[in-house]
Length: 229
Ligand code: SAH
Picture (cartoon, rainbow, N blue to C red):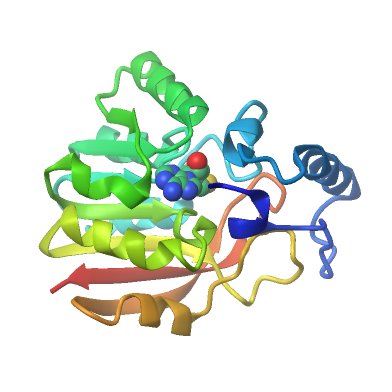
């Protein structure tokens, strides 16, 4: 269900040479070891995943600072919870879900260490409708680009079930402008527009960066703001 070959690819080649040789060979070794593991994410979370930067993504911080993130928030594919915890510290009511138990365990530990209230639990985003409630805002840092083509429409339908009418989904994903093939698949603006054609209004899709441990200056990304009609 979460094989490397679906959402993620990667030989570690970086034509722009931005990844240090040391980091690159470290990441390649890890990827090779994982192979086509059925439990790719669980295996990666046993160490420190390349996307897990130990702080919120700066694009999420900026959205909050300019007041775009409103009310209750659901973080889909929350990983170890840095974005969710940051928004909880800004006084939002926040839930974070991820299908990888190791990630949710780390997120819950951080919440208790930092004395922050976030409802974290294990759930597949293809089953979001089972939450039985809606949110004002949904954030996604690196989840959408991990979904297979078949899972995308199922996710979008599930997303519609957990967001208020007029509520907004903010999505940060790798863009096709990111060179090389290491890491998650690249997403084009056209793919995003196609996924959210019916019942959604695309407020913007803008060039952004996605920070990571391998590429500290950030990978080319799209930041999308999409509201439910
Ligand atoms: N948002 C986090 C993690 C990004 S990595 C961050 O910014 O650090 C992508 C995350 O999505 C992983 O934690 C993975 O476990 C989760 N994920 C991938 N497919 C999923 C699915 N179908 N349901 C729930 N979580 C999923």
